[in-house]
Amino acid sequence: MVMCAMRFDLRAPAFGPASARDIYAGCLEMSEWAEAQAFDILVLSEHHGVDDQYLSAPLAMAGVIAGRTHTIPINVAALLVPLHDPIRLAEELAVLDLATGGRVSIVAGAGYRREEFDMAGVEYRSRGKLLEEYIGVMVTAWKGEPFEWRGRTVQVTPVPMSKPHPMIMIGGSTEVAARRAARLGLPLFPAIGDPQLRAWYDDEAAKVGFEGGFVILPSGPSFVYVTEDPDRAWSQLAPYLLHEVQTYDSWQTGDQRSAVHLGDATIDGLRAAEDQYWVVTPDECVERAGRLGPLGSLVFHPMIGGCPPELAWPSLELVAARVLPKLRAAT
Image (cartoon, rainbow, N blue to C red; front, top):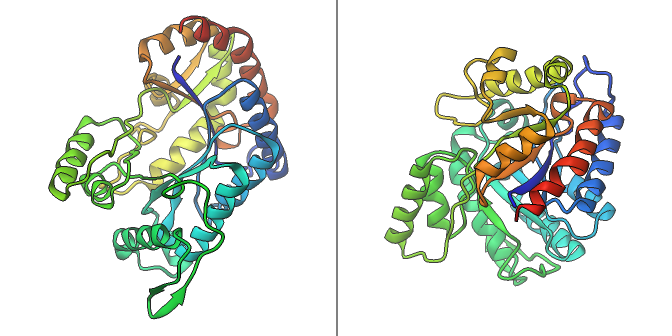
């Protein structure tokens, strides 16, 4: 069976009918639902200072979701590590690791929005260097012993349960990111499924003598909505999908690659990008999922762009009734 992921960024744009409180309440209810439906993972994202109230504290939200669930893994993709104090990050992730039994993992990203670095008082051009430094600090900190960093003695307690440390993957879809992940001895989880990233990763791993690493190349749509009437659903979803894709499109830099950067950020462009945006009937969803193979994934982003919970739930109910049973029967 393909992997099923549930993603949240908790946007609540002013044009939408759902308040931020509605979106957060919906997230918690949908997280419980996803666990009950045996989804494979819940994914949270991070950005700062966005007018649509994009989630800015994903580790706090991961803790709240963990308190409402019991077994489902929770991933933050991406956690923008250079914008944080690495000692505090190490402490927070250690606590989450202990409290959840190792259910929380991160994809460590360097970040790409200059506004966020200005807001945090962090030098934008140093983000790659800071990411590497901070990951090293966190890994050292999780040993629980005192060590010297930037002229002071620090010690992180409690020590996390996961060994050698909580799961960290490196994000990014460039050669620099792929080689960085291998050099740090960590897995790579890019935003696009480009095989060249694996080639760069393997080449760098061989150069530094790192064995046992891996690359997760995404394969499958970044949005799935199941409906009996796709044309009607497209018209209902259009404002939220367009807000999502146009916002991301405005953030992209010249060297940034992402599955949500379409070039044609219109509803026609979205409908044409059917490999990434599925608005499909239950039978179409099952058929397309079967073509992805066992390593494919379906990402359900039910409240995309501030989509209200009452529009998201009918799709999820169809998924539970008419998609998941057939996917499971096929395995």
